[in-house]
Image (cartoon, rainbow, N blue to C red; front, side, top):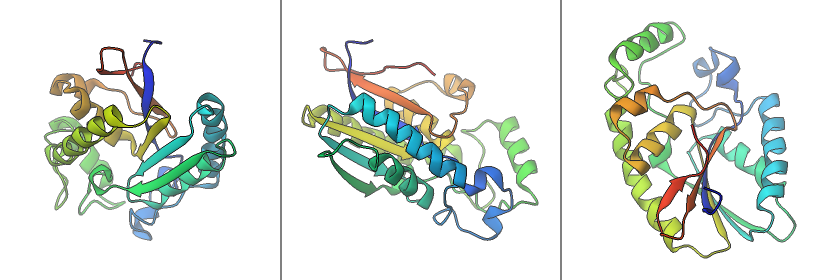
Length: 210
């Protein structure tokens, strides 16, 4: 698929406090969750490689989950872009992390076990979102971003920064994957990224496999 022109990069934020501290949500809201010290280094390192790969592009549109860790990841990347590059940040509520409702450090393991049994799409966190509800908002966003990348200038790249499982919701919605395939997808690591390109036929395609 090397003939695909990359128009969209979808990635998970760098390592955050909640990735290394199970009690972090007892002190901070999801929106306030910052990167860890390691995560700050990850975003900078990713940015160096990203800048080297896409240094020929002049305009970058970062679309971010409404969380501090997504913003800090974007800032780390933007700092490594070549001089003269233009970039903008937009917060997008439709790509926020799934609402886990009443889950706490005390009942998290039980909730995650129940989700595994029921399936990601079918399980609903107590007083939170179900997978189906998350998919609805990601489908709405996927339709929007699909239109944007098709009509954007040649020298513009979109960078969507969201969360690990949420990338899978996005890709399922964007490519209309089956429920069965979605449930088999591997988890995306911190700063893991997937590229979507547009071919000469005008159709988007995943450039790197899951």
